[in-house]
Image (spheres, rainbow, N blue to C red):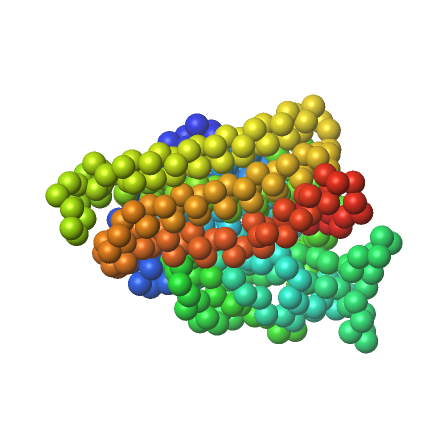
Length: 388
């Protein structure tokens, strides 16, 4: 039976300390530590957005964000891997039901992958022949299925186009063992996510293991499945940022009561700069979470009424997610700076939080262009809203 959402949040609270204890192992091995993977899998957290019909939790979006934030406060890499698996789980409601059952029906299924179309799919009888290589395969060492965005091409290799003029893009799912993982994840932050490149070459993918990107109506009902996949991904990224900021603030509080900065006779906590800085960091975290919660609540209310999310709702979700990521980065920077020389050592969690949050901000879903897209919409200018 799928877990109730309240039990999902409780499970996240229990797993966060486990993730924290194994954070060094995950970072060293550049993959999420097996005990953390097992705990997230067994609690059903990886499958939060899978429909109840397939044994998933079909959680609310608010609970999705809360669970990811909670785990990320234990370890940013664990929160990130949870985010990737959970948000790709939404594809269970979009794939043909028989394909969804094969990919997402197993209680031990863990999905991941890259939505951007870095591969080509040529039509053949019963499906497609897919060739491509994708970066940022977060969780690839422990996933049971990876998806890759592809452009459908004809026999000459020319891209097919849809009636609206956009290229025909699809997601194709590959079973573990059918793709090659390339050891490429040598990076500054979020090292424990194992976000390596992965590749397939002329792999047959049956039609039921593919689904169009954009414009596909979910077969599952419920308000969750009225949320756009890109929007859910952005919310998930923001949730990881909230967790990392929470961890950084808590670490600074602990440090401030014990550290006497060089040249000072008072502990850090007694210095006005630390007092003002930690208050500002907390305000940044709390206010960005409130904005995110408000945007989610507004969109969820519309979805519960059975309405498709409006352009305003979708833009609001993306704006709140990007704002949260930027605000949480500022909060972490404050904590890192106040930590002084302590922050630069590998033994200090502050240096990991700093590296992790600055890796997170490079994700396209929370990048600077989001502000430009939302601003164009606000100003009534023609705007490409395909990725909203």
